[in-house]
Length: 173
Image (cartoon, rainbow, N blue to C red):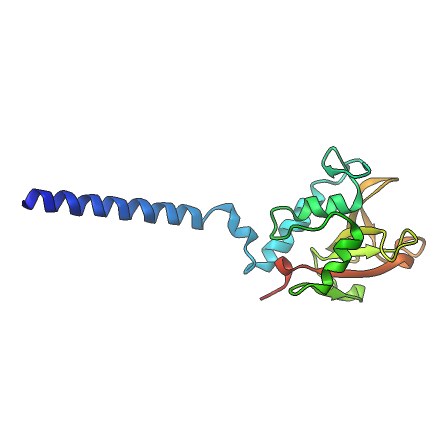
């Protein structure tokens, strides 16, 4: 009888050890960088992911490194970073009306990882990009593909500024 009790205790200990090991391995996985509690890391990852696509060509309706349009690029960048962005730039701009999102009207209030929007068509918003700091953003245009641009460019982008959106995954909690 005593042997049975010992085997049961040993089995119980082994199962507990395995569960603890699995929990620990999951806790230190790369997913940590994508938790909402670590907004600085989240912003860095978004910026880094966006920059990794510099040089990708433009493709109307494109959502991959084979080619991006502007909103396809922002959608692709945010994949795996706590947000599933809508498909079009105007839908992404309207996210600020949802609970947990924040509208940014002044460029000086932007933070890395914020979505930025410009009026490039007859619609209120025709272009989307991602702010990367120091007055610059990354976006995909039909003329240049994915490139870094200035928000304050006085010939094109600066004049077309509409606003920005901060997503729940990059809002400090």
